[in-house]
Length: 123
Image (cartoon, rainbow, N blue to C red):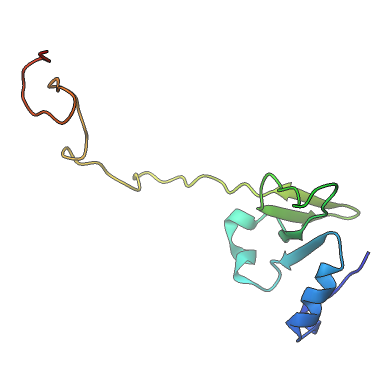
């Protein structure tokens, strides 16, 4: 296990070379001291977890995780990683209104192949 504080290294090339030597690479982004700390959507989490690289076990390509949106919580003796589920936006007004011209209705029967006649199909 290798722990590397990325903010201390100013050379991105060295960090990239070290990450290529590892099987799994994750990045932790803390909300402390950022504008996300005050965001109510993230109030129960302490930061985001980004999976940068997964191990390749008996394959040429790594397995893809279900979701790339992961968040972590810190408790007294527990580090918990969860899928990040943002709450739905609860507003009284709909974000998009429909006008009467936008609604498509099939009140008049139409025939196929782009015909615009109002008669039934004839053979």
